[in-house]
Image 1 (cartoon, one colour):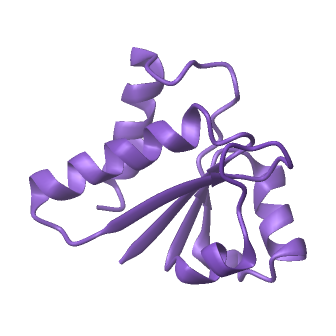
Image 2 (tube, rainbow, N blue to C red; image 1 turned 135 degrees about the vertical axis):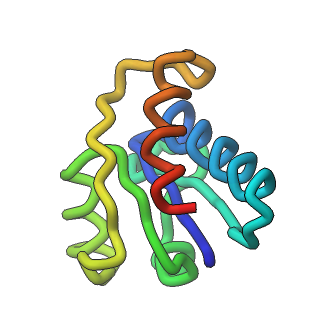
Amino acid sequence: MKYLFICAANRNRSKAAEQICKGIAQAKGKNIECQSAGVHELAERRVTKYLADWADRIFVMEEYMKDILVIDYDQKPEKIIVFDIPDIYPIYDPVLEQILIKKIETYV
């Protein structure tokens, strides 16, 4: 499986989710490739159609990001999961980490 995590700038939420998913997958002995990107034009790594097409499942932090992927990147809504995590946490925030672990474990 190939998982793509998306937030706005690819600085905090999606980067943290990518690392957490890799750790959970490794601990469970699952073969899951993880990458992350952002939808904003100034994102550290901006999502592309190629990257979105690469993913079997895409996890977005907010609902509007799903709309962007469906409209601008021609992605099927069924492969996109919305985590509903607002952009209020720094990357290593323990609260963010716990939220992401709980959500990601469902899919690994």
